[in-house]
Image (cartoon, rainbow, N blue to C red):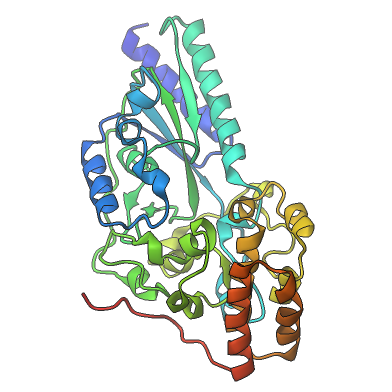
Length: 371
């Protein structure tokens, strides 16, 4: 068998292994990311990364995969669907007394699950390569949001989809409700010979629906205005201008995906680990606000929600309570929690109390100030 035939046989096995491990698609990219690096640096220069200082670090490793893992020649990019069937996304956004948690965070944290399966894929590839003497020292390393990796440009180059105007990867057959993961390897695997055509066209639904107007232009996200950033990554007080548009979103935001026409083709997940935990698909804000730190840690064990921490969790829920319909029970809960909260959380409780006592009605969204 020729070397080319050996590689083709390996690629056939990789396709089978990817399916067996539960991934919903894969592709191969090169390590040439010059254009993506320039775009990423320009985005950073605009300050659109907000307080995520780590995005400015390790640029050499981020832009040159072979510097991150020495000898890397190609990258296997995979995707895994996470949207649960019958998840009440839109109805939940309309129920002011209920909490909205981003669809990806309702079940088990995807990082460990995907990284473990990618490691298994890497082992199968290495074992096969050694068995058939295709390479004397095959090497693979798995990443899932765990290192400076430009995962979306890599996925796009691997043919998994195109970058939508909301900056997420879109697939014409699968929508955008999926996670991405990467397997770096020193094997010269044949790159995917095509890239998906951009099918966004003139549609700007995702840009227009954003509650905080976080898109200064198509294909550009100002993370410092994004509700996902504000409720998860942002530390400290949430700027007052964004509190009302947050509505009942206490962890993440899916509006730009919900409205996207391509997500009518989205496939539901078959992963039982991604099913909602702690009734987060139907949780009352008052019940979540009553959680002690011990209860928070218990209910979010193995969940991506742990990332925000208990103090920020209280902050987020307090804002949502301030946006909820006027209710004496909410006022009483806020007043009771205030003496036992940090100064930062107290600020948000005071804001929520002012709203509840005055019966202020929340607006649907805000607009970015004119330049």
